[in-house]
Image 1 (tube, rainbow, N blue to C red):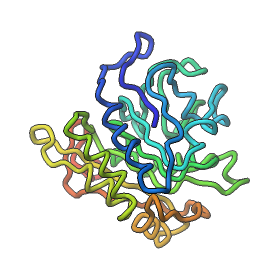
Image 2: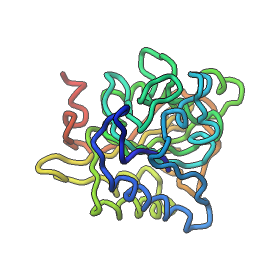
Image 3: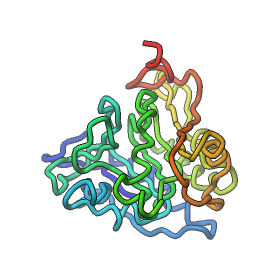
Image 4: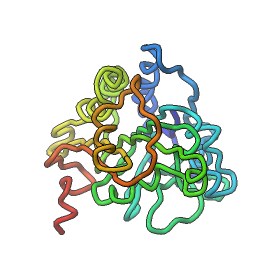
Length: 265
């Protein structure tokens, strides 16, 4: 569990002091089933992008000690749509002077998030715009390190994200706690979708979760997405020949268009 709930003057954001409590509900529940132990907790303090970016993509990047060293992780903080990728502002500047961690986009400057090449299997992102529909065609590029993966054949399995804005509040704590429980007894994608989908969460705006995976082909991709759980983990995808995802049709969040509408514009 790692992220920001109170920002700084250097990396400025609207403080949301309950965010870490909400994510901690997941963190405190996941070790109750004999499969996982709580390993890394980094909230606020000196937290920066360094813990999440790949060392092949920038000086000071140490994801192999933090984000990519664990089996399942949840990161959180203010997110934004970077045009063709998600970006999240952290509490402090990274070694490159940037406050932001980003998924790879069509451009690929230093400090990007590439995970799975060390150990991570499941990445959950509690952040706005972390899985916007118009960015899903590039999301798969964050599932491997283009430098190390060709040599060690290690890749991320699944990412659980949000299309448009997601929401923070004590009433949502149970959604995170129940996700940690349910993902031991049903597919992880279903546990994420059904615990985090919220129709009219704010006025007419919905909260729109998305579960996304990769595989060597279509069958492999959906087989993984339909069956992997915290306690039923496949081997790493042998290649990325296909990406697949589940969402709620017609989900209409704040901060984005109705899911799928971008493709009709």
